[in-house]
Length: 208
Image (cartoon, rainbow, N blue to C red; front, side, top):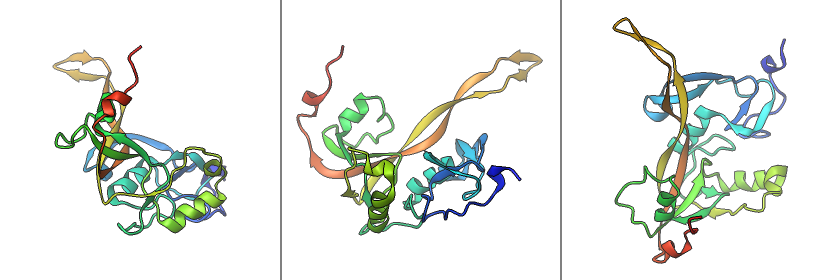
C-alpha cells in the first residue's frame, strides 16, 4: 500500500486543519464545481486524512467551501457572527485593492476610501480554534504578521483566478490550437468595515 493510500493517525480538524491538502488528494483537473456555483474551477480528490498532510497547501475545494459557507478552516464547522476571528487582518482601502489589480471584482458601490479587512484566502476561525492553532502551529508562532481580530459582519468574496490550458479541438474539420482559459483557483475574502480613509491615495506606492 502506498503512503498516500494509508489513513493517517493524525486527526483532521484536530491535529491538522480541515482545509489542509493531503498527499492522498491529487489534483483532478478543471471542471464545473458546485463550490463556485458550477463555474470552471480547479478540483481535487476528497480524501482528507490519507497520506501525509501538506500544511502549506490548502485543498482547492475545501478552501472555497470555507469562504462560501463561512466554515472554520481549522475544524471545518460553521462559524457564527459572534465567534468569527481572522488571524491575518490586513486593513486596506478599497481603492488600494483596486489599484493593485486584485480588486477588479469589487462591487462598484463600495467607495474607494472604504476600509476592507483583506483576509486573503483564509476564512475566519472560531476563537477557540484560532487560539489552539496559534499555540501549537510552529508556522503561525513564527509569523510576525499575525493580527487576530473579530471579523466584520459583512463581506465580499472575490475569485482568485488561475489559467488552465484547454486541449486542441476540431472545428469545421480545422484544428484549433490549445488555448489558456481563466479558471477559479481559490476564493479571496474581504470584510467590510464602516471606517474610511479619505487620504488612501497618499499611501499608494510611487510608480517606479
